[in-house]
Length: 200
Ligand SMILES: Cc1cc2nc3c(=O)[nH]c(=O)nc-3n(C[C@H](O)[C@H](O)[C@H](O)COP(=O)(O)O)c2cc1C
Picture 1 (spheres, rainbow, N blue to C red):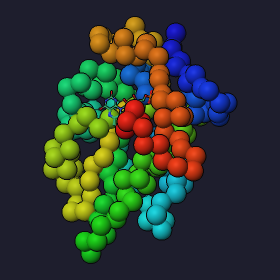
Picture 2 (cartoon, protein in one colour):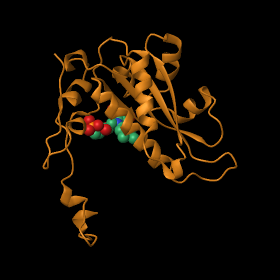
Picture 3 (cartoon, rainbow, N blue to C red):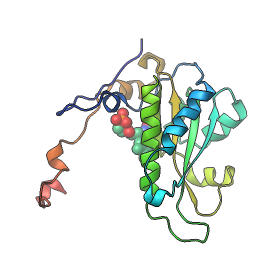
C-alpha cells in the first residue's frame, strides 16, 4: 500500500497543496506520454516576469534507457538510490540571460513557480514528484550542451507512489518522517518587520 503524507495545517488549505509531497518510492508503472505533456502544459501556465517564460525542460522516460541514464548519471549519490526507480526524470533549466546577454533577474523565481504548477498537476493526476538540486550542475550543462545564458536548476523525479518498504535506509525513514513547516508567526509580519534575534 502506498503512503500519503498529507500536510497537517493550522488553517484549511486546498487538498491539492496538502497532498503534494516529495516522495521517493516509485512503482515501475510508466507515465503516459500524454500525461507527461499535460504536466508541462500546466507548468507553462505559470506566471513569469513580463511573460518571459524562462523555463525549459528536458525529460526522459525510464524505459528510454540511454536517455534516462544520461540524466540519472548527473544525480548526486544521495539521490540516485531512490531516483533510479522514477518513471521519468526531468531537468528544469532557467534562461537566466536574454540572447543579448542581459540578466533575466526573475528567472529563478519563475522556474520555481512553473515547477510548482507542474507538481500540482502531477498531484492532481495521481503522480508524485520530487525536486532535486543534488546533481552535478556542470556535468548537466556539458552533457546536455546547454547554451550560454541557461542554467540547470533542479532535476525532478516523477512517478506513481509505492510503499516506503521498497526503499533502503536512510530513505525509508525519511519517507516515513512527518512533514513539518515553520509556523506563520515566524515568517509572516503584519505592518512591521520583526527584528527579534529569534526571528533571524
Ligand atoms: C530547490 C530544491 C532542491 C531540493 N533538492 C533535493 C535533493 O537534492 N534531494 C532530496 O531528497 N530532496 C530535495 N528537495 C526536496 C526538499 O527536501 C523538500 O521539498 C522539503 O523537504 C519539503 O518536503 P515536501 O516537498 O515533501 O513538502 C529539494 C527541494 C527543492 C525545492
